[in-house]
Image (cartoon, rainbow, N blue to C red; front, side, top):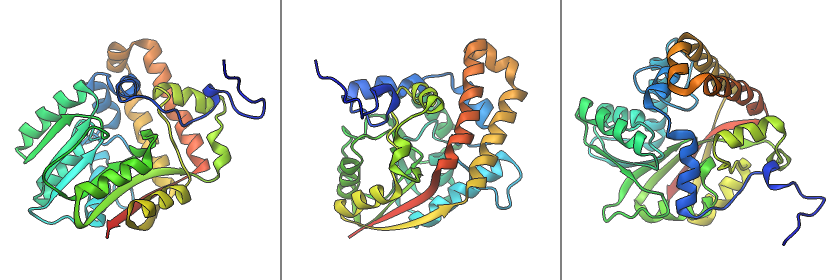
Length: 291
């Protein structure tokens, strides 16, 4: 049996675990195969965006979600008639909003059957031209190219990020755009997890692969993209998490019915830890243009 070097962190203290597609789906769904109603209650708003939103002028969950999605659309250069791919589309709130407001058609990828069902219901309700598929990005192929590919705090779950960028390059039209919004370590040493980080990692099925911004940029260059960065101030993440905590407390009795007392407690702890740990990170839009 191989032994871990005394100088190296043990597996539970580190990120970057490589799994098969099947195991990756199972581990990812440890987090996401919860009742959609639970996520709707704590994310709030019309679009139930489960990621940092923008609060320059927003005062409500919906306003902050739409401000962030409009920023994504701006960076992706969305125009009517374009075709977009949303990898890790969740319950299709962002995909539905982008298709509805910007007149684009869309494909969303998820690994969660619960998300797929909720996404289909939302898409039908808003009558947008979009479809959601249960498919791992490694298995996804399409005979029609995309104008833009977007992710929102999703690529943290991708062990082979370089492989993902190369696939995006193949799926995009000439001069197509890839827009990824993600947290990045300020220093590689933060990949060694302390107790709070271990708790968060377990909540996510140990699928965390946070990188430095420099590493992500290098992988994008290697895949054939011109890369640019747009930083998001930390206060936006703090405000988003504060709203989530408030929403959870407001709906605590119903959430306890859905998750149980222990589940409610663990998610509250997770959000408190996430607010603290992100101080060792930057949040950035990283835009890659195919050339």
